[in-house]
Image (cartoon, rainbow, N blue to C red; front, side, top):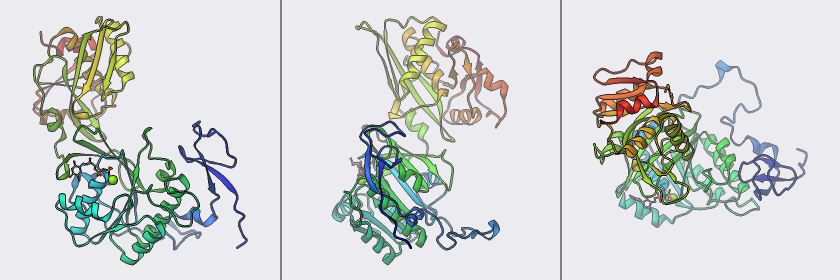
Length: 461
Ligand code: TYD
Ligand code: MG
C-alpha cells in the first residue's frame, strides 16, 4: 500500500464535524473553541464499525446475506430488556449516557450480574474506579457471581487483549472517557481518543460477536460528552435520566438499531441498587392529596407507555413588578403560552400572579398533551377551587383556547381506568376522530372543545 501522508485535521468536540483548517468557531454547529487537532484517518480505520468483516468490499445478494440467528441474551431485568428491544444482541455496541452519579455504574453492574448468573461470563472493565470499589458496591448489592470478572484497566489495547483472551458473553466498559489508546497522541478524554478507543472496542466486539456496553458521561448541555461521533458509531444509545434528589430514574432509548426508540424503563434508586418499577403511575400518584387546589392528573405518554402524573400549580400574588413563572418538569415556554391563553381566552387575571408549576416525583412531561392538565391546575389554584379527584386530563391547548387532539387516547384511558379514575377529560376532536383502539368500558370520557369548557367541567363548584 502506498504510504498515506498523515494530514492534519480538526474535530469539533461538540458536534463531531471534521475540518481541514483550525478555526475558533465550528462552521457546523457554531460552537466556539471546540476544534481539536486529530490525526487524519487512515482508510481502513473507517471500517471499524462495520458489522461483518468476512464480506467486506464484496457485493453479496441479499438472500445470501447471513441472517443473524444468534439469540439475544435475555435479561431478568425486564425493564432494561424492554428498552434494549428484547435483550442484548450479540456483537451490538451500546452507549449508556447520563449525568455523573445518576446510577449508570450501578445499573450496569446489576445487568452484568444478571447476565453472569443466567448466560455466561461477563467482563466488567472499570477505568474510573478500582476493582476494590466495584467489589464493595457489588457486596452492597448482594452480587457475588463467579462468572463476573472485574478488570481495572485504562489502556484500550490491553482491554482488547483481555476480551480476546476471556471471550466473555458481555463486556462493559465504564467509562469510555476514562480509557485511552497507547498509540494515540492526545490525552484521555479528548474527542479523537474517545473515538479511537470506541473504534478499537467496536472492532473487537464485532469480530468476536461480543456485545459491548460503553458508559459515557453527559455534558451540561445534555449531549454525551464530546463524542457526538460515538452516537453514530454505536448500535444503540441509552440515556439514564432523573433528578438527583428524587429516586426515580428513566432509561430512554435514543437510538436503537435493534428495536424501537419509544421504549422507556422506569427504575427507583434504593439502597439495594436500581429497582424496576413495574407500575410507575402508582408511584407518581402515591402521595396525592385528593382535594387540594391546583392539583391535576395528566395522562402522558412516555414512548408507547402511558404514565399518570400529578401536576401541581400555585398562584400567588407577586411582590415584584414582573410576576414570575417557574416551571419544574414542564417546558417554561409552554407555561408562558398557557398563562397567556388563560389570560386572553379565559379571562383569568394572572397579571399580578407568580405562577409555579411542578410535576410530582421529578418527572418531566414534554408532551403538549399535558397542556390541559397544567392549565386546569393553574386555574384551580387561582380560583381556589379543587379539581374533581376522580378526573384524569388529556389535551393540547391551542392559542385560541381551543383543545387540540392528542394521540393514543385509548391507551391513556386504559391506564387511567387501571389507576382507579372513573372520568376523563379529553378534546372532543380526538373522540370524534376515533380510530385506533376502542376506549375502555368503565371510564366516562367527557369531550370538551375549549379550555373554558374544560374548566367548567373540571373544577368543583
Ligand atoms: P453510580 O452508579 O456510581 O452513578 P454513575 O456511575 O452514573 O456516576 O451511582 C451513584 C449514586 O447512587 C451514589 O450517589 C450512591 C447511589 N447508590 C444508591 O443509592 N444505592 C445503591 O445501591 C448504590 C450502589 C448507589
Ligand atoms: Mg460510574
